[in-house]
Length: 481
Image (cartoon, rainbow, N blue to C red; front, side, top):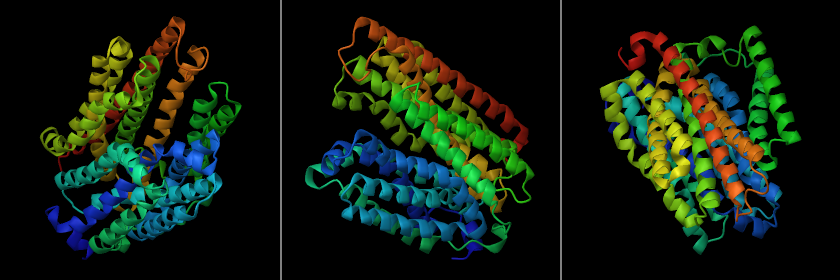
């Protein structure tokens, strides 16, 4: 299939191998940590792992994944998105297969690091390749909706699937599952997507200094929240990582402004559709992570629900995430991309406000908040990506997709660290000890309100800025051509 034929596609059926392959990439990204989380106690007992080691079994993957996305996005835009993605899928398959030989926690962490590198090689390119399958925005939205729906199914079904697998098989099987997923993705992309046309790549040399600074900045900013959540607001390691991360960001920005061939051209990020899309995605990542974290603690620790009952309590979020895919394409077609972006972000902000104001007064309000945030999340995930891709030149789309994921990863970490720090500052004693006193219950609920309103305000500010910035794109912002 030639590149021109791909762009001429007028139906999803014409490019179904490509869509299947890209959907498999997103299935891996979403399924990976969710399916593994349920196995952490088993892994800890089997490998005699410490609490810190278990934390890094999942944390190392997320930090490396977030840290290397910008670099591999830039590499893919220069040397071929399809080529880098296929190499990443091979690496994923090999690393996942190596799980069968793991005997220590350190070995497993090393495997997870390699899997994080593979994810950084594949995920940004998936958005870019999905976008270029069509030249019609309606078909692009439908394709992205299908691909992300498969990922959401993996995210939602991961813990349940992991628990069922552990009943009949050892824990390494949960990572070995990635081998056939990687094979399916490789076959679909190899068959359904042509190699990048030379005119869709650029040959500027890679800014090595910028790559080092950018990667260091993201790694530090993703490590800091992990330390704050584990050790509290007084974590020396957390503050060192946070301050070093901010310094690295400042140096990265200075470098990009001065470099002859910047890794990330500031002028591209300043484009209205790109800046607006990134801010919408950041608001969504911040809100979703914070709400999920607080509600999980509230249901089990404040209200004393069992893990099984708490899982049922989170079902409104899961149902909307899964069923919302059927609404995305018709809604965007009717409202336009611009309106869909601000409406979905308004839904996220409203849900956060409902939870902050009323979430401690009963489960009904928690459920309302979960539904509103999940609806907004489901919508903005597709719309923000489409707008960012539309706002970039064809030869820069992969680094743009990497920016979207990086923005979401960092704000997710900031959201959890922010509300976790408020909890640590307001709550006396061990929050996980159970059997709280009346004073501790009041402290927790006050912290939920303070943290909830703080996140609401930040998400609202990001969404408002995104709305105002995207208006600068003119009629194109709502999908007119």
